[in-house]
Image 1 (cartoon, rainbow, N blue to C red):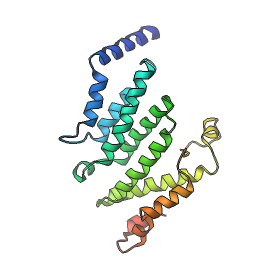
Image 2 (spheres, rainbow, N blue to C red; image 1 turned 90 degrees about the horizontal axis):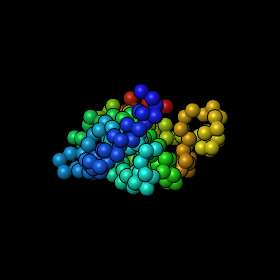
Image 3 (cartoon, rainbow, N blue to C red; image 1 turned 60 degrees about the vertical axis):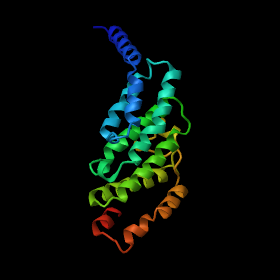
Length: 207
């Protein structure tokens, strides 16, 4: 089978899925939280579907779907109840975040970087506040990654990164050191690490 035939068939499948209201059904599944919120692994499958079809879907329609995802996906994860949250993995959640960031770039959503970085901070704090030590450690590790990413912004901009300066890790587009320090103080991260509820394992991971 030629690549053209595969591409042509793929376009047919996307159009058929759209005519069957498939993309709107995905959006509705994400926002339907009457019984439970979809876990991050399911959200990841959903957003990846949109990441595969951007080049065969009318751009106006695609931008509309991305706008709806932007308004729903992050809120679902931040609103997980304790019961829903206990089985979640921060890596899967950040995979969702990365796909969303890619979608934002695809549609030239200028505030996409800020949107994703704010979510990273919020979900890191949600993990850090968990009563489960493993999740608290995961949240702290993510906070450390955000600190490093904010520091890298002092030395590299996104254009340098794209041109291959050897920086393979993420460089923030919105978050800078000043905002990061203010966030750490506002969320009392250091007070939690060194206060009365000090946990030696957390303290070791903070170094």
